[in-house]
Image (cartoon, rainbow, N blue to C red):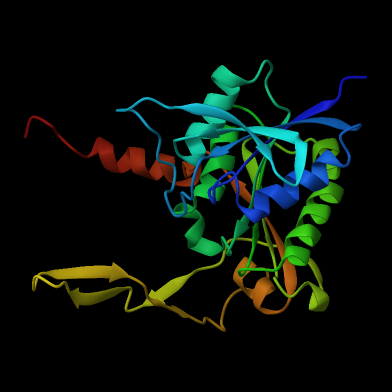
Length: 265
């Protein structure tokens, strides 16, 4: 029987605790599937779906110190680079699943548009591979990352068995306080808004510069099934995110609008 081949990546860098804990949890079940790790050589958070076009990508094989048998490839590129490069150049065969994470910090609501973690999973979708993005909602301790890794190890076989559409990724956020988790919710993307996103400062030469910061605005009127609300109420959030993004419902109306334009007028 052919073993499922799983590709692990992230945006915190290949030596980050999240990817090490996840990889170790998967390694302990290596008799059930094959594992490959391809991840950035350093942190690439909030880089979105950027890819590298104007410089070479370097790849080095590495070993994790806590488990010398656990090897991977580090890439001097973005999370999306890692998935694209893994599938098209590094790996001998196409993975059956991409798992991106475990990210340090949440990826909820509209923040998924900026997330390198989620973008790596989107790259998997573009290449026709079922994909999962997983994040802890805070900095987390070792036991929190281990819990998250074990949760993914229990969940992903069910997702593969269900044969979800390859146009849909599963975005998972897990509360850091694992001792007080109330359960699991299937959710939709909520809305993340920030107040005073840029802080104005003066450098030693008197020049003005800006530092992206901002304070998260709590929205207590969120839908009951919003991912942001689930996390606030102590639940693991599991959100299906669809790609591509075309709104087919308004295409007929848009066509009618465009037919009223005369390019020669």
